[in-house]
Image 1: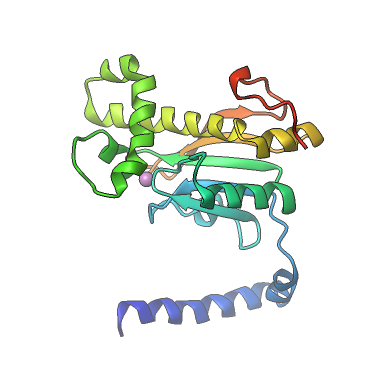
Image 2: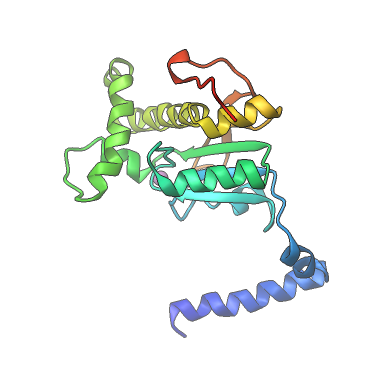
Length: 211
Ligand code: CO
């Protein structure tokens, strides 16, 4: 059997198990999705939103990219964010980084990764904001993991700076913004920060004429 064929075979087994457990599972989900959570995570194959949170299909709306970035010119991210907030009305947005992230490590080198350079530039900027704290960490792994944490915090703040989130905050008492980190070595999620609706942010980034 080819490796990819295993996926198709496993799918049949999974459908069987799901129906055994809940015969109406697919009928119910086929009509509507009503997730409470938007997950913005790393593309890393080891950090699967559903698996590590013990959730099922239908519970989390997911966007993943290299190093879980919230880049304000990224049309893909912004489309996902607006759809999740305006239409799905998610109550929580989780930015989830992970220790040992390859994207973060790459951004800390001088290697030329071609098109990826432009993406990693956003992470290099985060390093620059926290240069003194990061440069003082001599252990390479610890320095990487600290940048992973700073990066998650920065991306959560990037969410708060969008008119999409600010507009929702003005109208509702959601979404809450969360910054989490996943440990590849122990499988545990750690909460780094929680920004409730209508938290005051740097007024440089505040919009007044929201609708
Ligand atoms: Co990663």
